[in-house]
Image (cartoon, rainbow, N blue to C red; front, top):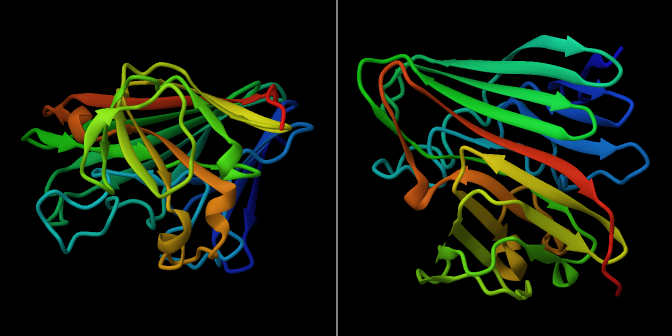
Amino acid sequence: MPITEQRHDNGLPFLTLSTAAAEVDVFLQGAQLTRYQPTGEPDLLWVSSAEDFQPGMPIRGGIPICWPWFGAHPDDATAPAHGLVRSEPWQWQEVTDNPERCEITLSKQISGAHPAFPHKATVQLTIGLGSDLSLALTTSNQSDSAFVLSQALHSYFAVNDIQKVQLTGLGQCPYYDKVTGERALWPEQFAFDREIDRIVQDSGQVIELHQPGSTGVVIERSGSESVVIWNPWVEKSKRLSNFNDDDYRHMLCIESANADQDTRLIAPGDAHTLSTTLRPLKARLTT
């Protein structure tokens, strides 16, 4: 069957979706993907070997969902980083189930009881797996007042060597650097050689991650005009939970987002969908 239910050794339930083209693992805690493995290719996602998959704790790697705010809460310093749903159980239901394409929907009802987000809402993630992997995160405002939405599909991609990867598609896009505080334009040629934590404002164009001698990834988006690029580098890696000191060498976050100047105002009764589509990219660079 294309959908199987399993349980991690530490008790967390997850689903495996299988088609002729690929497999993914999706944990019900946080509706979080931890594996996307096209047939005959390596896993395109990265999860730290230091991750212990503890119930009630965020998973370090894969594609965490940051919602309804990205990063720190804009007004409440006591609110959890990256929102309310990363460690919460989600409900799921099958949409389609066949050998060529499998689709499921996971959903979470938000009561409005949390003081950092006093609004009723439904957040829903639809995952489609076939020749590509699609994720559509839909927020529906069920309260009587509008709210500002900031969010991200916090995708950790596996890389062989962070200093050899190349990104295309972001050249000359304005960015905000959360490390230095500067605002500038992303250069046409960029090397990862230090801590990077940037929110790039773009038009939602296609981004490609290339790496020599190994499979890269093509990233397409809609409902998004910002993308977060993150690698903690040497010193910050030593301070992160569930993260080995040298893990920065083998991961790069490229996060489809609504962040910084791309936050969205969701009126009562309205909805917004942030979506991304991933597919493998054959290596074309040489070492």
